[in-house]
Length: 426
Image 1: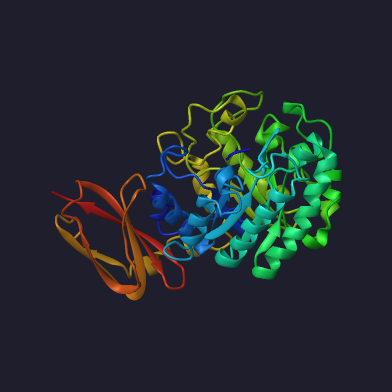
Image 2 (image 1 turned 180 degrees about the vertical axis):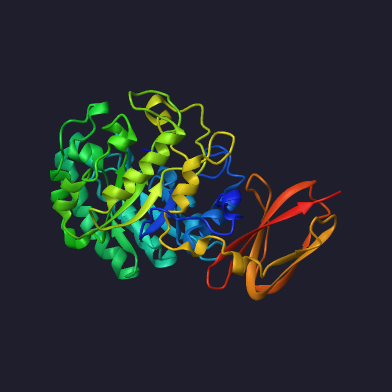
């Protein structure tokens, strides 16, 4: 399944009630405004994720293990790009997933060997070379080998065992070159457990899980989409994944993808922005049953690809902004899941920040007793300026800006975020 800004009006109040919280990381799959074709707002997306959750936002790259057959063995471009842009200039955490298929299609053949399965020794050598170079040069926080691999068990359980053997070898190689990287593979819960009645997934495939040596899985990746099993988010029970949690014990789990659609395309489930809000409440309830260390909502921005098939179109609107780039109500609820309130404005701290003159026609000065970085955004969240270092005073030149409202997001050295409004006058 395919896959900055916090809600400004919300962060301008003196203190926002957090409500439900989640004691783990939060993030998104790569989804800048206008994706998949338009990546002109890629920097704004990375900046926003880098500032969310007190600097603990995660960016997931879930893309083929090679750019094309001719580059087999090289680190794919998007994985390298995202990993190299953090922790500077952006402060997000990197999560790299390397699928080998868009089921039933496999990408395991090479120029030297056209065998398209896990018996291809040339492919395995190149795949391992890519993972070794990724670990050695990039040291990502997470590496996942394969995506929703239980679908391959259903497709070819015999060759699946060959993949498992490769995974175990790759685990050892990655840990040799990057011991602190958490390594795992990704399953889809609904298909794995047979809890996908809305799409005909009634057969469980637990053997796809149990053939692994759990000692060589630091963290289980899991894509979780309960609308495949329930027509309304309120029906998702608090024990939704208890069968999976029981099988893996206290092993760490990261939901690499989850969410609920806001727009109806196909299927029998109810889709709406309100259902997304309800789903977040349900999600917090059932993840508490296991050792879940992180949650990625599938997309921050709407998937703007009119050419995709119906199977992927389901996921167009599993996004926390709509097709116009406007916040859905669930975005504030999602960002407020962070277990600390330090990402929210505190009135006594925010009053230490001064912008003058405000309104401003040509330039403004922003000051604070404490050192901070800042970024300037327009009213649709596009990043216009980003400071390179921490200081207690900055000049902001506004003479080239259009008349209107802008936002200055300030990040302190202890990762507190404060948002100020700047008005550009004639």
